[in-house]
Length: 239
Image (cartoon, rainbow, N blue to C red; front, side, top):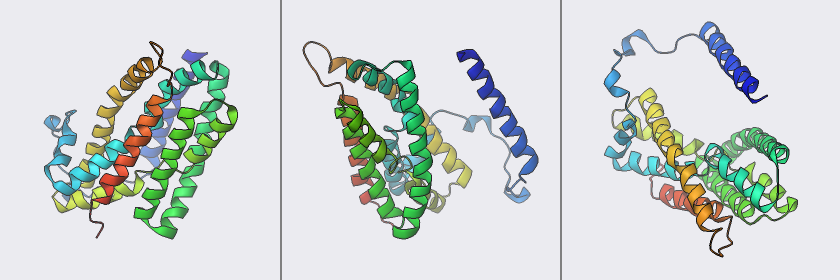
């Protein structure tokens, strides 16, 4: 049942944490360690990224890209598939599994792509793939279009990988450490994850009420935001 699934997930997380604790050595040197500062644990930590033009632009790029992250669209996926395609829990579960497989495929795809064309072009290609995926998903009325959306997803899940690498470099140039940058980026994404699903639900409700019939509007918005992320990324010097 559902409760046992959560319990099993918690057990796996604990086992993973214990395994990492015992198997991986600490990489932070003693001379680089800092005293723990509870004041640094704030949900607004990401604002540090916006004190410099380059890091602000890269953080904006990542933020725009994150609107399409699967965790942000999972709820609207269920609502859309149930309303438009008549899917139930079982069919949606199969769709979720298929998305998971595309995430696995994308890991290999992005590694190969980045090695062959570099991070800048890989970002462009993966953003285009995600735009196409959201476009297909938002207009899908059959299993064929849904399958096409999954195909494009396999090219776009990790579209922020190269941008994150550039953010690490730019952040270090303004005195931010790797851990601080990683935490600030995760903080930014977490803030967006609070209201993105709510926003998509409201958009879906608006575009499917009072005679309006555009249930795919949230996906089309994500496609537009992803395009905006690419435009924003293009303004950053990659030297």
